[in-house]
Image 1: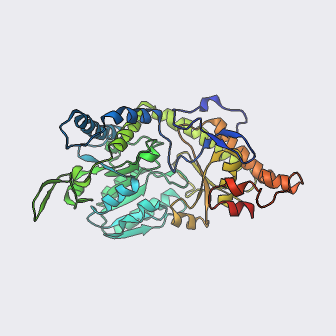
Image 2: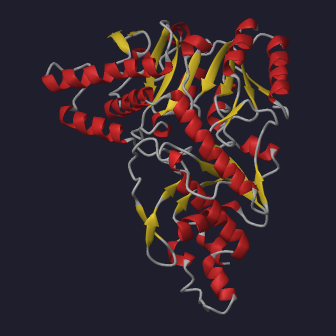
Image 3: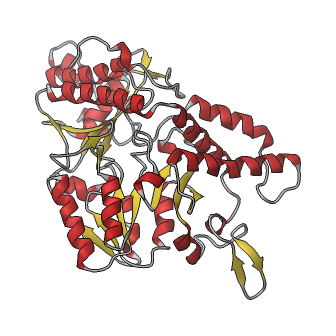
Length: 439
């Protein structure tokens, strides 16, 4: 690992909370180091600016003749154009606003006219919804090539309507060759859905060039944490399906005995929409379109390599991977630490170093079971991550291995004799973590 701070790895964009001060258990405060972007990314400055600009005009959408309503409606519908440009969507693909990726995938699941093939390494959002018309689970192999071979065999065994795959694993960050999988799915008579919740914040995607039929992602992972997501995809299945929600906005005409439903996207957007969420998501998409894709990927690769190299040099650290031949990996690093429970490590990093990481099974229980784990740690890199942040995380993990938690080291060496009432984690650790840390 590079020992000196690499100034070429400064933050790529300004995000809310980049100067957040958090308390330390030993006293004082420090600037928060966020390595939990894969769960929820902070808002981009451009996103908060867009929301602030829109708030004075906030009004009803599609149903008001007043000036504010017209501005709000125009902003909401223009947001579809921002998403379309961000994804380079094809002419026959529509943008449906949802709550998040999970909502998008459940919406599409009700529209699929047949069985869906999925891998066993998926996030629950891309694993659980597909049971209504039949879910066929393929066990991922140790290599990408063999895994693709298994998908081909399953798709060829009998007809399937859809192949649903992750864009980037939410546990390990590994990326599948989506262009190739789209060709395979189409050759086998199926369409392809990509869960891009973890891919969209890290890599640019062209639906037109890749021939991906459907794609979903969440605003809260794309630096627009205002409760919006999208499903983008081909119109025919969406128009043929029953509305996702029955209500105002999804209809053209209603009588006492029947309803005439609108076409997509309105067909699946009943009720008052999340205007601020859509505007925030559009602002994030617009901002990403101004960031050079190669610069983004190169910066992230440098930081991720720095983190992996640093962690790999620490005794007892095991870096997690699904495949031995992954063609690409985004800035997500999952690992375990011999002799330490993941939740303990995460709480230690927060309480003593002001570092936020994720611990647990990451809503991917089948994959963690495959890896033989009850839980792990995940450090994810984002637009606000710097080389100094990476070095700080590596140093904190190394210190834990070397001496244990600071309060435990002090007590063991006679520097401090705590009582149950004065042990630091009793009052400062997150709820549910304290008993594990002080026992």
